[in-house]
Amino acid sequence: MTLAAAIIPVTPFQQNCTLIWDDETKEGVVIDPGGDAERIQEAIQQAGITVQRILLTHGHLDHAGAAAELAEALGVAIEGPHRADAFLLDGLPEQGAKYGMDCKPVTPNRWLEEGESVQIAGHDFAVLHCPGHTPGHVVFVNTGLGFALVGDVLFQGSVGRTDFPYGDTAALIAAIRGKLFPLGDDIQFICGHGPGSTFGAERRTNPYAGEGAR
Image (cartoon, rainbow, N blue to C red; front, side, top):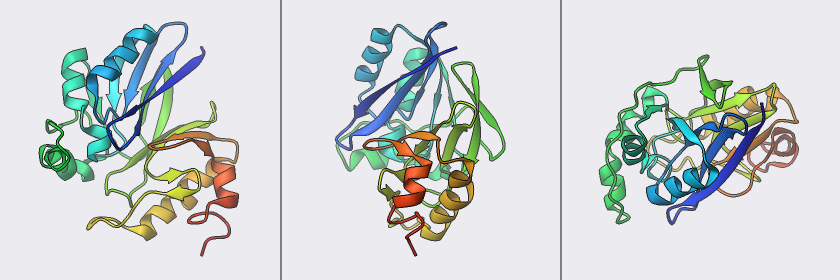
């Protein structure tokens, strides 16, 4: 079983919508379809994959803005994030209106909790609740594969914004240091914006959450 991945930067926010699939079965998932649904569907067709479900890491516009449209078009369920982000998913039309984007509200078929798992291309990925950027943010990780999808929790050289009314810097840093870094230095991750990295590189050098940070 070989996993393949493709990143489709979507919306003016250049969010990393990610397709992950099994190269043999051609079955996979879409993670964080923030917008540009037609472009995402073109990428799915080019890869020749059958999408089994849509996964959301959190409820921000640039990660969930096209989820309802895409789920309807593909006939698949939406899973995630944690229920604490329900207010953001309910407010997607208002979020979108501020940026000239037409978005539908999203009600996931399944909310996710810490300790549960999701299926990604035939592999079980653990669900970690990592609040701070949003109250209901989740991360997907498979330690056996050495791979994680972290949304906007952690970036190469940075961490997620917490300057929202519901943001919590202490909770974000605690999640990164207490839940992600202990999983192992070799784990590679795809994040919500920009290039990915490894937990080890960020543990050593990240100026906000790494060893040198206060």
